[in-house]
Image (cartoon, rainbow, N blue to C red; front, top):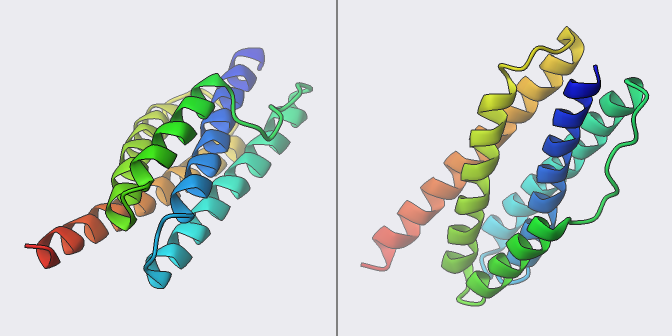
Length: 147
């Protein structure tokens, strides 16, 4: 269980970093509909951390603190800089973040873990897929409108 706990900690940290990336991006989004949806996605990441942290604790390990790690600081900084160009820049930065989250969760569902934990990981992966699709669709719409 120590190995799966370590992997879940890494996954939780990814969600923590994503949460803070969303914090930076949301500040620069001027479209209220998009901003509201991104706020809901940010809260999905918070929920992921809470659920993964409970699973980690159930294995007798300590979940990560709710703060970005070094990679998270870099990601949040990149997102903040990219987002300064407004909604389009914010969505482009979040797209990169969500692609990484999707890739990582896609790999995570193949891990050998208890059924209840696998269910959490699968549900979170579904959220990540939904986040990425929404962002891709908004980018496509904004690109089409600006032509």
